[in-house]
Length: 250
Image 1 (tube, rainbow, N blue to C red):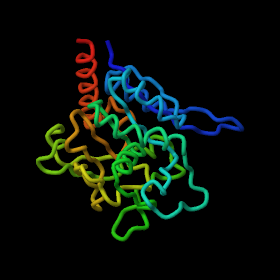
Image 2 (image 1 turned 180 degrees about the vertical axis):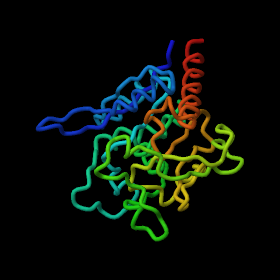
Image 3 (image 1 turned 135 degrees about the horizontal axis):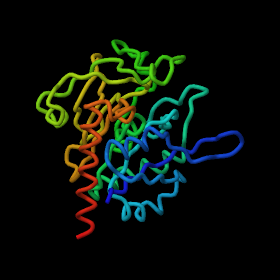
């Protein structure tokens, strides 16, 4: 049996109508990388049903998205005009994250999910990393093909002696880069596990979490089966989800 891994959706307007959306690459990351059964969960902003969700899943993957966390959640300056937000996703995921950690449900955050975990636990974000002194432009080429946008873009360095370095058996590796927001201040209880060449945090873990609780700024789900780093991370997440599934069946 495959562990059930929830992926909370984006709420997005397609034409005149709202839809609940998850990028297919995250679904494939769950099926091909983590060996799980994906369960798409609507972002309805209804925290009352979150406990029911937690009783039914073996893990949660928080995906990336074109939208950004609304900055009032971390006391940031108002977003610039035209910034895409998803208040229903914020209202679903931000209260969900502490519950997952408290109950020991494996959690993997990717890109926006990485940023959500930092915000939910009390951290802050840069809204435009490329405008910060000394920081690189982490955005993908706007007119590139998907293969060009998700191609390896820069080196990341795992913290020596950290969990990620131990998992990978190496400290330096290449990652893609498809974001312009990033960690400005790491939340209490989070430990940096990798940084970009400009010092921007690329991965962290929840230090005292009772189960897998890890997040990355890049996109390991993209063509994951051809990338050993991606498969190591998704595989470790999947193993944690399977362990929870087995413990729940006893």
